[in-house]
Length: 489
View 1 (cartoon, helix red, strand yellow):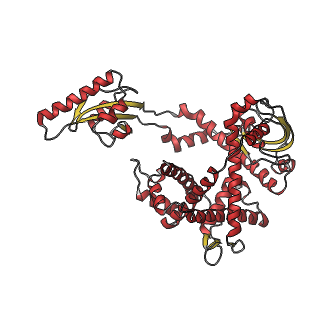
View 2 (view 1 turned 60 degrees about the horizontal axis):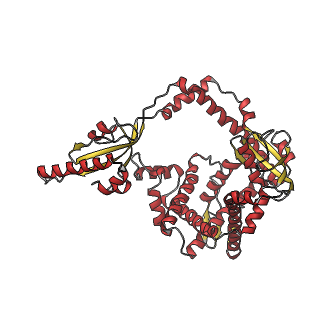
């Protein structure tokens, strides 16, 4: 069971890492030509290297994700500080990979290759690993298979051993009670808002832009007719003659009788179907469009409604029953049906980009000086609001216009000490950053604690796990020989 769970964790980790890695394709590599040391390394960690390519790809991802609006505005000191931060993170990952190897807990190259074969980015339309697609993706990234696999091996190993460190963290009842008290204290906070509603109100989208978007993307709004089916097969012995045919027919008729008595199709497929490939999955054949099944299946299956079971029918393989789990009808919407949705989509995207750019400017200012009022001026935003916030009691109003947004801001403030500032908080209403100024503790309810215990424990463990990971990495750093080549870059 542990082996299976680790395998699932590895797949999830691989997926997350791959999404980040594939982002290379769309990143503007304005700094790619720079190199580190004469050996092409930007850092060495106890003999292992962080290459120039690894560094610049990670650096550009960081800028694109968090500081894109400032890309041309960073001075030399700003850029050097950010480069050092990114390079230290990469060095930490190498340290964790080395520790995973020492503990014999690392992902092997074989694990990486197996995970790659099951990842959708490298699969064809039939859901099979496609070497040509794999090669094309790597070619667009500009990396070799060896470099790609090494990156995945390090990242997956680091995540696996980090997970081991996190799993060792526990929280006592006293810690949980104190966390509950912190969560329910009344907090006075300075809140700087970047609301999407404000940006939407001033964002114009022309009819030509809507039409252009439709022309470029209209195929994505079309849905072909598809069905999801499962089947039961009573196979005919090719050498059985009329008797074999009669036996198969009798078997399918007996299964039909069981279904009529209330039998479950999937369970019967597991016990009675002669298709060994789909038997373990309860006969599940997945989703199919017209023409993807054998003609006899097409003729029967596409006439079924969701939940309906066919009458027995015969093919050269034997007798069959089909159950339709879902039937997606063909959809070909017109421009008139979708134009308002498209206009809102473009408007929302532009509003988000506008407010994210302002929020990035404010967050960059806060890296240097923890003053939200000054950050607001730099971001050309109104002065921040001063609010009293309390979980379950603060009503929507002012810059916090919905309960989910209020809960998100309170959740970000709850673990902080007076004077500390949250990271950027993203909600469906926009972006927010808050600084805790004062607090008032309330009498807490034991019933409330029991009701919220799981939520409180999750939040506390998340914070303790991060602290444990940071402490563990700091101990690894203290023993390692690390050299950074920032000046050479």
